Image 1: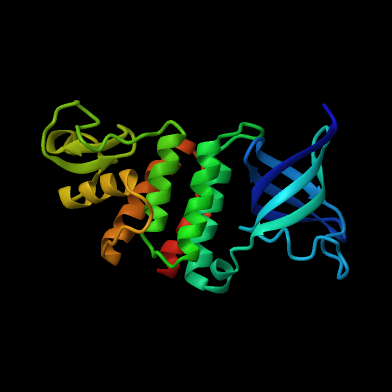
Image 2: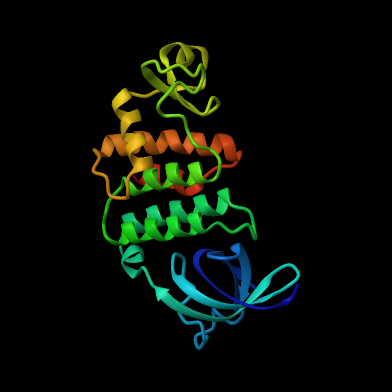
Length: 241
């Protein structure tokens, strides 16, 4: 039903609308993913100023509409300026935002996903490094119902030595299942153990750059297989790396 409501959220992305407005996609604490119009935001004297930049954490007053909501008030809770000021952090934040946008449905709230997004952005702001991306992806996919098998073979269920990763089967696989699945990739047991650690631990796990790159690629294929859509920011991150 139409009407005003209060919430807080993180700006995932914005697109231009007309001459002065923008459509802002947010992930909010109570209402999940919301698309709302910010009227006049592109004008020099806009009352919103820089409050609705991507990755900004804001408190909101929103009018619920039939197709699009309208933002009537926005105040910054956390600016995450340090994330936008550093190119590598900016690229990684774009991955976090796009992943949440692609994984979630509109109006389906999840306090766990909301908290994860804030924690991931905070970790980037604190300079915790490249491992934030694969850690965030594996945690988000797990919350979204795509929890990867990392301790037993996703193909046969045996507690055998794990030697690869299969997006189709849903996680790490043994030698036999890896050979049978042409889409599976070889993944060293140490990499699988690291991925398990990234899922279980807080952000900021130290990892070699080559391991981070390999796991990020594996998780990109895993996410795209199950979501059936590309994660463009991950491709850009890989190209930049």
